[in-house]
Structure formats: structure tokens, C-alpha cells
Image (cartoon, rainbow, N blue to C red; front, side, top):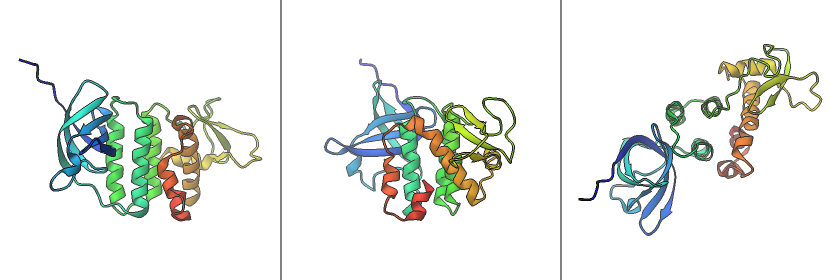
Length: 242
């Protein structure tokens, strides 16, 4: 008798889907134990009662396959997709794109999965968008091994001081600068606030956004983020979030 293919089981989110052949979907998933992987969801596009293979729904899934492309066997909804609209929808798409672009296939990221899960819950509520988004970006960097130590000068080991000015060295940390002629340095006060997650002021939030953009850029490469492009033309307030 032929061997029965072993099924893998996990809890997962769908990051992206696109049509595959006549009735199926090709899905990118982020699973708690198994990390990011791609799988075919057969006949999903014609599923009765709605298609469960959709972004932002927390799912129980099982799949088979030894190649890079798996085949989903079962999909059960653990928590329905939140109703996201306007800016909150774009932020959700941005989260999915970051995870898709930066996580290596098949690598487990349990801490980041739990952070993603909580961030989606916050996104569905009335929580302020920017603080939770910046915290997710910093957590993503930390989980990937690119975390930033913002309270210590990475070159000298000296503590960051509130009245100092510092520049970011991506992948390394921050270091003091003697002058800030181009206005590109960060306030030590802001860095210390970001380091402890105290993102409760407009000036600190602006610094946090600039910091995470600079820190993520080397790992995202030259290809623009589609979710940021979608923001264009949606108004200055929406563009400012990402």
C-alpha cells in the first residue's frame, strides 16, 4: 500500500492570495509553528458559505507536501476576519506585506506571530494606529535579529542621554553626533522614549516612524511596498501613518 502523506497542523493567517488554475487559490500563510509558507487551496474560490482562505482571519489549517508549495487539506475559522476599512485596512495590508517580504520561508517566528495576532485585534478596535504599528515594526526587527538598542551608543558603549543627538547605523544601533547640520539626527530624549515603548507624543511618533523606516530599508531592498503605493492619493493623514 502507498504511504499516506503526513499532515501538518498549525494555526495560521493568510497574508496574500491570488487565483490559481480554474477554481483554486495560491495562498501565502503565516503559521505560528511553521512560519511563512505557500500552499494551494483547491476549489476555494467556489466554496459554499464563503471562502475561509482570506486575509486577517485566524485559521486552523492542515496541509501536506514536501516541496515549497504545499496543499491545504482543511481550513477552519478560529476567529473571523475583522471588518477593516479605510486607513485600518491599508495598515493591515502593510503588516502582511512586511511579513511576506521579510520572513524566510519555513522559519518559525512564534513571538512575532503572537505580536501580529495582538496587532490585528488592536487594529479591529479603536486603538490609535501609529503607536501599535511602530511597536510591531520594532518587534519585527527584533525577531529577525536586527533589533535596535536605543539606550546605548553602539560605538562607544556610553548611555544615550536625553539632550544628545544621535544618528542611526542600520543593523547596529545609534551613535552620538557632534553636530546636526542637516537635521537628520535623532533626539536622545525621543530615542529613550521609543526604547521603553512610550509613544504618546506627536514628536516622538514622528521620530519613531523615521527610525523604523531607516531601519527596515536595508532589508526590504529597492522594490517599493505596494501597500504604501496604495496610500498615495488617499489624503495626507493616511500617508503619514506608513
